[in-house]
Image 1: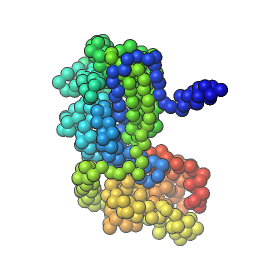
Image 2 (image 1 turned 135 degrees about the vertical axis):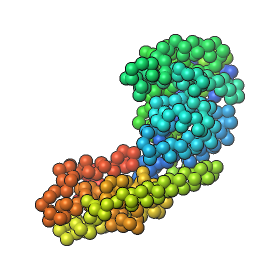
Image 3 (image 1 turned 90 degrees about the vertical axis):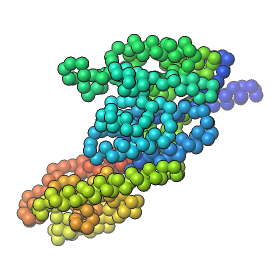
Image 4 (image 1 turned 30 degrees about the horizontal axis):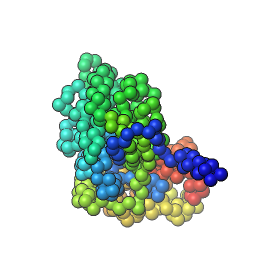
Length: 437
């Protein structure tokens, strides 16, 4: 009877653990890998919603430092996509993402197309261990990295999908990557023959990745990231398939037992969230202060430029002009959080950050819209025109001319700012009930 109970308990424990134990083999070493992917240009979380307040470079650095104290020989890798897009506003943020990541001493980072948003020279301003196995010019990026920590040797490879190249439709031989996987297969095979643990990142779904590469020589395959949440690890033959989350909100940890041939005998996996309770890394305080100072300087320079461009005519009026005809709606608005939205930015020192100002003022970066708190005080906070559009023509026509967004469904209006990254718990029905007018 006791044996039966013990067996049932063991089975239940086996169900709740994210792990895998293969048949007994001679285990020569253990290894811990901390992995991530698709930071997607997120230097820090928005902070507008508690549910979305996860991640950020400061917390990542702090958590990695803590993990290294527990496991001095851990491997720290990323499948790439640290950056997001090539907008001028994001260039400064991208520069500091690279600088911040560089302080964490990553062992290897796979390159994705988004990382080239500002070109190769931009990436090379900050030394990082980029890897692209199929890049044509071998002197640009490393084709692979050999990393040794403790008793474990790891070979890291990255396949950059030629079909995702922004140059693929250009005539001539402009694509900087090869489409032939033969060299990758040979390199993987050679690494396995030397008893190394092989890690391959391919930013594609598993089904596509498995068609490109024979997985016999791949111990760990890191595939295209899931949105925010990490995917559940899968076993594909002898290959452990990992799927990181996006936006830098979490880290993945996999603990391995490895045999004498560099093969995985067993593994355990867990996801590490990066909530507000994780302290900012003190070592990055100067980095963060410098970043905010440069963001503020860039904002103030843009203010001066917009002042010069301002014609004196603006399509915006501010909510005071709406009060006389829409008294009840105005009263509802004035008691809402929208009416004091800019104060929240001032409280957290973000009243100069364009990423935040956009949804806490009226018409920011639009002709005649918000410039700064002194010059355009009447356009502070989330006001009537934030939702309904510029209202001067509506006011001057005594209501005969509709506001620009008059035909929009209410939910579409809210979704201008209540997006998944910034407001993950947004529910139209419950949120609208707070401001119904």
